Structures are given as C-alpha cells and as structure tokens.
Length: 200
Image 1 (cartoon, helix red, strand yellow):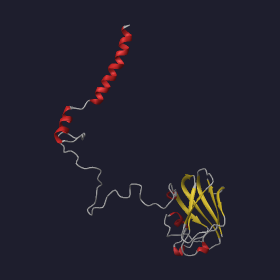
Image 2: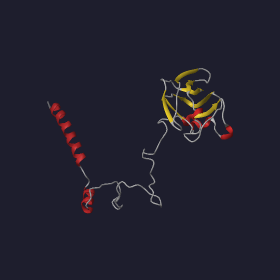
Image 3: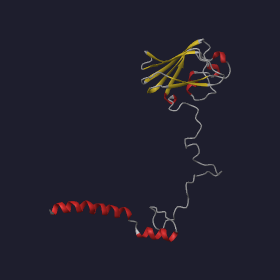
C-alpha cells in the first residue's frame, strides 16, 4: 500500500518541481529589470551595458546597407537550381572563335554573349563535374540575326559520352529577337554528359 501512494506522489512532486523551475526568475535579474524599466534579459554580466538597438543593419561609410542582396530578393534571371557551374568542358562542332562566339558562352549566364557555328547543322556537348539529372533547360537567342536561331534540336544525356538517351526533342521553334525560352525534359536519370544536336 505504501508503494502505491509513493508511486502517485512522486510524479506529482516532479511536476510541481518542473513547473516551479519554469516560473523561477533570479532575483538579481528581476531587480535589474525593475530598476531600468525594461523587460529585457540577456546573458551579459551585471556591469555590461544593455543592448539599445532593434533589428538594425550594418552600414558602410556612405550609409549603404552591408547586407543588401542577401535576403533572397536579388534579381535572378536563370533557372533555379542551375547546374551550369558543374560544366567542366563545353565543345561544339564549330565555333566563331575570331569573334569570341564559342561553346563556353552557352553556360556563362550572360545573355549578351553567344555561340555561333556557321554550319546549318551542328552540336554542342557539355561534360559535367559529376552526374546530374537535367529536368529543365533554357535557350536564349541572339539579338543580331534571327535567321540563325535554332529551329529544331534534340537534347540528349549520356554516362560515357558514347551512348546517348534522348530527353527532349523540339521542332519548328521560333524566337522573337533576343529572348529566352525554357523547356522541360523527359524524366532523366543522372548523367555526366549532355549534348544538344541542332538542325536548321
């Protein structure tokens, strides 16, 4: 009988101890808050000055906020989750090297640069630093000669650069001057190479 009673008293005593522990505020902190009229408590030592600011942002000598552009509101025109930083090699059937219009420009995230091959059919291939699944891609047309913009292409993926799997095919595509179009691919397992075969 004694054990049953103590079994009921112990949980009640533990609950009371926990509740009183939660409600306990050290006397020196209560007095300090009462003396300065605030309800702010910190881990500072008693002699340290209390914080006087609220949600401020550091600024430079000209008054510009030092944290601007890190709040997620910076302009971003690329595809979220882009893997262009994983491209370790870009090669093509042909390039206009004299004008700097090379395959590497296709992954530099600059819509003002371009790749140009004067052949009516061509290809461009990207080797990645690690296998990745491509689910979406974008093509941006140049602003100078709409007649050279690709109209038909096939997007493929490969593990070895030899055996390719088609993940997207487009025909009779048009663009309006310098514009970017985004395309979805078929479900693709992770591949270490991608290529785009282009025909006019």
